[in-house]
Length: 102
Image (tube, rainbow, N blue to C red):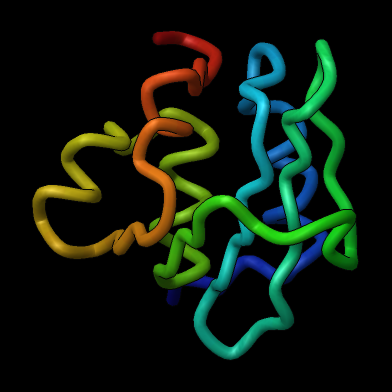
């Protein structure tokens, strides 16, 4: 039996996943969970319960897929290309992202 990660687990994993700031805000929408935000406007990313400003992009997926991406157990590109992760918004932010392990 597999357990679905909760919001706090996802937020912690997201905080560990991002190497440096990326001059933007990503809204994370995990199925059946309240969204949270990755604020990459500074040198280091901050994880927030509420939007610090308007989001530049939105990531939507299942909690399990998001956790796998954040923990680098599933390649980000694989999750996106397979349709398990959808992305909308300012794609130039994607070019500035650096996940740990990239």
